[in-house]
Every structure is written in C-alpha cells, then in structure tokens.
Image 1 (spheres, rainbow over the protein chains, first blue to last red):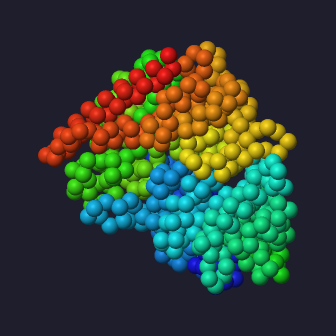
Image 2: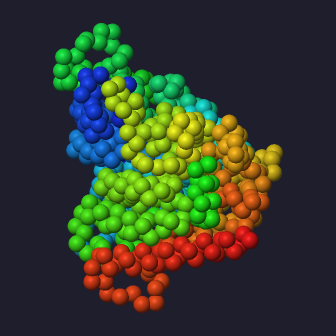
Image 3: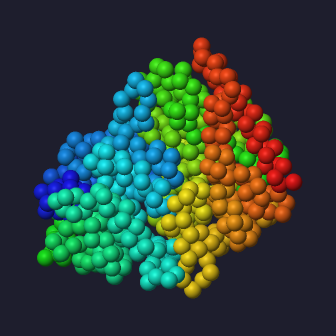
Length: 311
Length: 311
C-alpha cells in the first residue's frame, strides 16, 4: 500500500475518482454518431481522458469499474485497458474494480490482472491490464485470494477484498451473525483479511497489501471494522450519490487521518449534469471541456469536504 | 432452465465440458510461434473449436471459464466470445463461468452478458457475449442478483449462483454456521436462491432460472442442499481432476435423475495428455485431431460413468 499511501500524502487527498462511464452520464454529442460498441468505447475513452487530465494533479488515484466497459464486450475492455494505461502515464494509482473471485487455478488466471500474462516459453509476460490494485470477492475463501496476494507481492501491487459493501442488501449475507461468536460475516472476513495480509505489511506504514472494501453507508459497522483491522487499508465506496456523507467517514480512518481511500464516481464524472446552465454543445471538444471543468470542481469540493470532516 | 434440461434430455447426458484452456494443456506445437496475446488467443480458439466439433453431438453444453481468456486481456476476451459464438452455432448451451458480482447499477452493467449492450438512442443492443447462462457471486445480496434475473427473464436465459464451491477453502465462509439457525452460510444462500428464483420457475419442469453452483467434492453437504433447493438446478464443478467421483454425485440429482449438470474441464480437454503414446506432432492439424479424439473418448466415458452411477 506504500505507493497509494504516498500518493495520498502527496496530494493531501484520500479520495479516488471512479471512472464508471455509462451512456446516460456522457454529453449526448459524444455518442451522437455511435453505431457500434467500438464507437461507444472510443467515446468512453475520450470522456475518461478528459477527466483524468482535469484531476490528475489533485487526486492520488482512479478506480475504473470494469463492468461498465465489459458491458460493451471486447471493445469496452480495450477502452478499460487504455484508460488505465493513460491514467498511469499521468502518475495516478489505478485501482481496477473487478471484484473477481474464483478457486485456485482459476484465481491464478485472474491474478494476471496484476502479474501479467501467463508464462509461455519464448514469450515475455505482458501487462495487458495496467492496474496497480484490484478488488476481489472473498466468498470462495483463501484459495481464491492467495494467488492475488502472491501476484501483488511479486509486482509491488495491492488488493482490496470485499468486507462490507455499500448497497442496502449487503445485509443479506454480510450482516449475518456467525454462531458462537459475536461476529457478523463481514467482521469474520475482517479478521481473515488481517490474517491473510499479515506477511505483507509495509515496514514503514504498517498496512498490508490486502485491503478491504468497506462502504461509507454503514458508519457504525465501518468504525467497528476499522478497530478489527488495524493493518488493513480501506477502499470506501458509497460516498455522495449512494448517500454516505463526510461525517460518516471519520470512523473509517485511523488516528493519523490515514487508512482509507474514499471513492466518488457519479459525483465527479457526472458533476457537469448538475451545472446551472448546460449549453447546447457544438463540438465534442466543448463538451469534454465542460465535463472536465466540473469534474475538477467536484473533486476539489470532495477533497475539502473530507479534509474538513477529518480535522 | 428449459433449454438446458431439454438439451440434457436430447443427449441423455447431464454433463458439461469446461473449456478452460491454459498453455500447459495445449500441445506445444499450437503455441510454437506465439509471440503475443493475440497469437495465444488464436491458439485457444483453434483448440476450442476442435473440442467443440468433437463433442457437440454428445454433450448438451460447454462452460468456458472466462478467467483463462481474461488472463490474455482483450485478445483473450475475443477468443472467449468467438468460442461462445461457435459453440452456439453447433447447438450447444453456453454457460459462461464469469462469477461476476457487484451492486445494483454495476450488476446491471454485468447483466449485459445476458441481455446485450446498454441502450443508446439510434443503436440496437448487440449480443457481444453469446452466453445462455452465467455464474454469479452472492456476497453482495439480492441487489447484485436481481439485474441478472431480470436479464435472464427478458432473454430466456439462466444464472447459476455460487452456493457451495468445490475448493477446500470454500469452508472459510460457506461452512460457517449462522447464529440462531441450524444453517451454514451455503445453506442460507440455498434458501435465498429458492426465494429469488421463485417467480421464474418453468411451468413444465419446475426449475427456476436461478441455479446454484454446488461442488461435487462435498457429497453430504450437496445432498442436503438438494433437499433445501427443490426448484434449483445445480451446476456441479469438482468432478474428476478435483477429486469428486460419480458416486458422490447421486445426491445432487433429483429423483428423476435430473436437476444437475456436472462439469469436467481438464478431464476432457486435456485427456490427450493421458494417452499412452503421444506422437511428435508434425502439424497443428494433427495435434488438434489428437486432442479432439481423446476429448470425445473422455466425454463418452464421463457420460457412462455418471449414467451408471445414477441408474
């Protein structure tokens, strides 16, 4: 987590911009001539690069949600990987929100997201995904996590495992109490994450390479999880559009105001839709400038909002 | 599930071939000149089509594991979608083993696997994935499942939700007992699946569109899950290479010998590696013929093995 922590320190900003494009969030002019998944993918890429250019100096990281790209098939995946590559070229930490989870040998294949294409005689592994970290699902247990930890260790990268997600029905499984303990399932996962990450703790900052996803929408649960996981960095979805406020975030940070990275997606990338006067755009450049301007404003406002809540 | 059930009846074979290529499972000659992910992806596609041609008339379905393709990035995804398209053109039911899981709006984007690319004015949705069903992860609760059920209902397709996976560490979460019940987490998920699928039950066969993944490696747990889920079709991994035997499968089927689809991946696609005499292949065609021959033999042997155990 050192790379992420230092990027947060450099920008004095524990927030991450969720690059989750969908048709309804883009100015119509960007999709006016879209006739194929390739066209949409290209529009997503233009949209993303405009946002990245607008925020790269004030945020430490971006978090593209692969589902949004995957919904356009192969062409969308191309836009996803190019977005990641571009974000990295701008110095951003790229957290791929992929929520993969499978058993041993298959998890190893998914871990290629971090350590490159599988080994073949006569061919160098290729970093096709350009991610610094990915999110992972714990339902299959340590078999499904171990290959990611190994790949992260090998390549100086990180993972974030789902503990308590931000959605209402996260309660269906995650809030169940485990018999003969006082722990809910998400708290049980918390203890596993501390254990799974133990050998990968950073010597300077104390956080392991195994982070946790903990939603901003459950502040009481979140504060308890913070206590249970002192060496586990949090990725925090649910701020803004999903209802989490800056005040809800305090308990997710450690006593140094570190230990959590707060995501906002729509709140930043679709901030332009909340502008008082949205002009009829006469060119894609004009539309992208407008998107970029409001994204930067929103990113700065979010930084202030969180910083104030923490001080 | 009707389409799957009728394909099983037609072939008298409740098994599915897992199309999970990886470099070590392919004859070396297929990768001899591979210099890029594109080359590997093309080799995977050739490998898959040879196997599909060899088994399409004796099995009802194939189950490509997307992780194996995803490990080669965009090029791999291309091989995945083309494999699916080809399998369908041969009349096979294509079960995409994608194990996706995310919250509402994001799950909706993933559901594009079933119902095509998102709606955009002036553009028809495109079926970029060519899947008849996909696997889904339940950790996020019904929010993450509902969009898939809706898409399945809309397009006459199905989903299979992870209940009890075949790997040893599935116990880490799935075997935990829930307080104040006699249920483990996987049994709790079982009851949810019955409930989530209730409105989508097939009028003729009684099974809903919401299936469950239940590993062959836990026969006692599996039999209990069969009782808890009378309207839920099972996808059963873990037979063969992972240690599950045909005898272990009995309790997973219903009293009509229906209700479960048993997967084998390596046991079929890498059966050629168990041949007594493996020649030095002088051409890719010769290698693919060899692979195809042993895949068909293994698929027939598996069919007999399961049929005998059920009779």
